[in-house]
Image 1: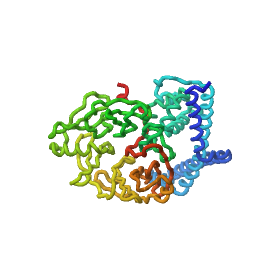
Image 2 (image 1 turned 120 degrees about the vertical axis):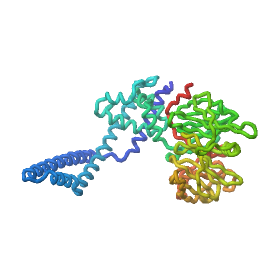
Image 3 (image 1 turned 45 degrees about the vertical axis):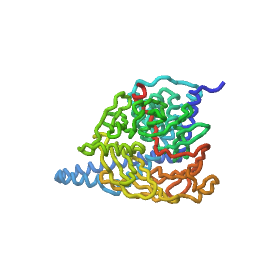
Image 4 (image 1 turned 135 degrees about the horizontal axis):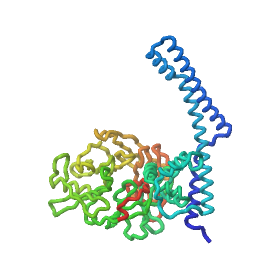
Length: 496
């Protein structure tokens, strides 16, 4: 008989822990650990001796009639003596690093042993979420190696770095791990640690899919599978691990938890943006509607609510007249909004007036224009590390990355000018650079670039080296211009 799903999940977790174990730095020898412990003890003894000598000197000076103010000056001078103090700090720090590395190896030894036992015996598995917060469990746990506060902290650091799928498997290992991975503080920390992955459309096994490219691991992660929807979906927004998908009908989706909810209010409307409203803790959607040939209206819908709220388009304190309100909606509805610093941004391409950036302040619910540089070529406005950037392709051999350095002053600078590795890409027989499927886009502030050519996507660095290649069958893969940062937080609007 085959193994149970829980046993398979536990075995996968053990393998993930072993992989992390192998990535640790070199383990110090027993002699090095012993020498480090001796150095720490010697440092503590020397510090105690210095304190005793200082106390005796101060007592003698006081008996000799030295004023209290001069004694204070002498005490401060001795405490800040540069050379001895810095030397002691350096020696102690190096010794503490050796001891900390050894401690983490011991924690991993214990974690691997415990996880292996659970995987073999199938013990301690539970089927419900914990009711006790992790902080309470940690507060009641005695200090020491097994189950101590330090072990809990190291385990948190390990699990926070795992992909969402691996964390879900970890919940099958034991009650302690399940309790930990449901804690809200852990879920927020896990989201912060996750990489911001560029999304692509591709076709595999007869179905259209959305995937995420992990640049560091050179892997393609599955995100959304369209096998049950013949029409497929378009990703029209991404925010805090949530995707807004459109296929004639609209859905909000969390791929990490596989939670879905329909948004019927967006049918026959013009979607503009998805954003978190920090004052209320809500996730909201901004959209517009045309009413006849002379009027349009803007609405805000909180996810989980049935009633949208109409707002008036304003710029500062001035109400925007209908002609400009309609013109903005006409251009913005076919474009993609970019969420940075809590505000939505649109790069609007106007045939007569050139290109502009419109900004929507999600707190004051007002609009304003933002200056931007004149950049030649095909330009895309993107978000990277909560910063606005332009990815600009002027020709097939070069791509530029422009970064907004000062948000308030709208100061931009060209951070990278990247020569694309055309010679390496031409070595692949199917890669015709004149093919209509060719495209390139910067996908990180470090200058990583994804180049699509025929049925391949190449990951290149800013120096023009090809780091990885992904091959796809069927129709050409496409960069969908959105990013995904996995999030295991469960939102109430999925439960309504």
